[in-house]
Amino acid sequence: MNVKTSYSGSTAVAVVDGRVDSANAKDFDEELSAIIDRGVSSLVVDCGGLNYISSAGLRVLLIAIRKTNEAGGGLALCSVPDHIREVLEVSGFVRLTKVFATAEEATASF
Amino acid sequence: MDARLDLDIGLDRKGPRRAVESFEQFALENDLPMDLVFKFQLALDELLTNVVSYAFDDDASDAVISLGFRVTDASLEAVLVDNGRPFNPLRDAPVPDLDLSAEDRQVGGLGIHLTKAFIHALTYERVDGWNRLNLMQPLGTHQEDQT
Image (cartoon, rainbow over all chains, first blue to last red; front, side, top):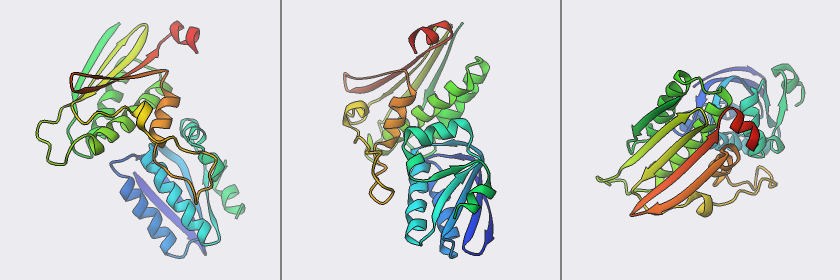
């Protein structure tokens, strides 16, 4: 799992690739927390390169959704592969966060 | 076709990942569809993570966790057995309320919820001190008949 982040004021786009499971969910949590701790309230998680996420990774997303909501912004997802989208739908996460086709659309939604 | 794979899973946190990676290799060698491979990986990851995290004391020296696969023209089957505490995830795991807001949502039970949604047939039994979970997915024409 790798996270590459670009910042624009209080908005950031975090491009995640690889897999997020119980073995590295803690690392994923630290990556997203560090971004939010830099003053980011509106966070786009670009899932274009994400090929796997388990409930441990969903837990990390949930924490980031709460933190960004509390900061007055929010979290949006973009470029979600079909099989990851199915995980988001079955777990009800599509009701907790918006999913966009591109990072540009997601950024413009804030 | 009749191919098998048997794995012994360690009690460490990386055990589930190693197991699903071994399964992925086995699945590719046997031309299983990627969508099915992903769902089995997720289900096994969730079930194994539960076992590794909760079924044994940290200093358990006699812990045995094993995972067996069998793929035939008719089906893909996985059997997960462990000699840990009795736990039926299909009955005992908390049921997540998917209608709650992010602030009120609990993540507990989500892994089992995904597992139940993604696996065609899932059964649990406790036999002679062993937990035994069986996962089965029909393949080929059998799949179309039953879905």
